[in-house]
Structure formats: structure tokens, C-alpha cells
Image (cartoon, rainbow, N blue to C red):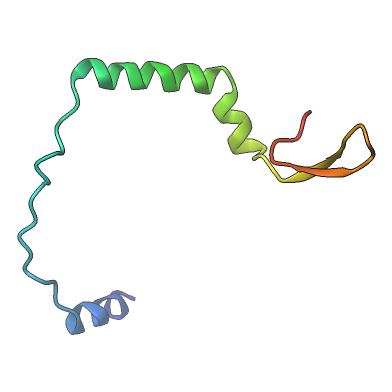
Length: 77
């Protein structure tokens, strides 16, 4: 099996690239990372992210007051 995995790497050769980080990309501050962790924690424990993962929003239709079918992206429970 290992010989089978080795075949593409015998044919392909990795290019010698010298990649640089763009100058506008900076390391975020510790407080920014902490804020993102806390916000995502509350979104997960609040069930918002869980609901989107388990039951993704789907496109459906609802009937309006005139009897017409209108498409909606987020259906009510």
C-alpha cells in the first residue's frame, strides 16, 4: 500500500517557492483573540451555532396575508 502512495511523489516535484507574509497581515493582540474566544463560547453555549450546524437554515415558503406563497430563507420553528 505504501508503494501505491509513493508513486505520485516520484512523478511530482514540489516547486521551490519563497513565500512571504503580506505586509498588512499582523498578529492579533491577545485581547482580540480573547474576545473572539469569549464571543464564540457564548454563541456556542447559547445554541446559535449549534442550531445552525444541527439544523441548517433552509429555503422554504410561507403564505402571506393575501394567500401568496413567499420564499423565506429562515423558517420559523
